[in-house]
Amino acid sequence: MSGAANRRRGADAERAVVAWLREHGYPDARRYLAGDGRQPGDIDAIPGVCIEVKDRKQSAWPTWIRQAVLEAGQDRLAVVVRRSRGKPAVGEWEARWVTFRSYIDGELYSVNVKTGTFGEFIASLEDDAPAAVLSGKETAK
Image (cartoon, rainbow, N blue to C red; front, side, top):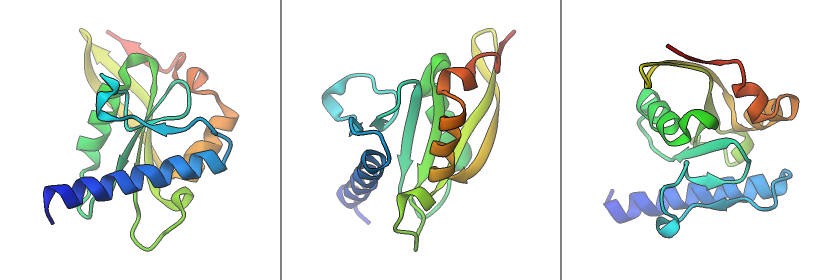
């Protein structure tokens, strides 16, 4: 598949996530675009959350998680959502979100990741706001 086709497929997945978020209580959800400067993820929807969207046949979860954590910085919750083949509903797409990060001398050292669906991730935010999830769960050495 060509580079242009891959970009189009990725943009389509991002638009699907934005539409789903708008339908589920986040009316201001939008894609970050190239001219937006340094972007904390692919989607701007939930304060304190960095959302990376992937539409790839081959998984690269460790790389994707690291990318999301680095883009999120230390003040945002990082989540990666991957378009799941055969599942048109975005809420059923596979997602992984970081529940704990540790740093040594300012460098990312380790992360703990929870796996579920994107819908489960959003539901978990209703229980704990992103800031509450991050507070007390980050360590620096």
